Length: 249
Image (cartoon, rainbow, N blue to C red; front, side, top):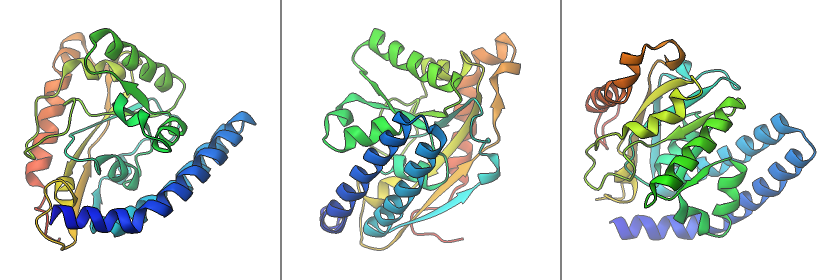
């Protein structure tokens, strides 16, 4: 079933993906060169939400989002922290309204078209094999947050192969704590069932819970030390409360 879903997605998604991605890259970069930064960002988001909705149709994903009111205003120093299960996590984050640059593995930046798309979204490549390179990527994210551009990161470091949430690395939280940004914990459930762990062609209900922001600029040194474990606990609890892949509320 996984192969069938993937084939269906590729057949119906390939051409629209290339066309909308190239259009997004060209218009987004052109407006940025003209120093129309906000117009560039709005154009990118408008075109990509069309693409993302088509992706959801092609893979049979039904998105349910709780807590949209917890998304900070654009231009706020913010870092989204989420669990990571699937290649669908990125479009789900955006589909739920959390537009941000993401720290993503450098292999994704080697894929034609996708490379340009990640760049126009101000995503940051990370080399997980090098501690020094990883730190440099985090600092790039810090710079973007200080400029008022939201960032996001998956602190587990890689996708879960079982669906269980792995330990979240404390170092990933530096991207939020160094600029004194708001941390917004996010729990996502069932994204694996759309592709990696698909067992049928039925629509899969994916649930996202966006939790209340944590202002790291107001935390004490002791609270900062336990921030990663506190956020991980909050995400785990929310994840356990969310429904299964074929449940509907």
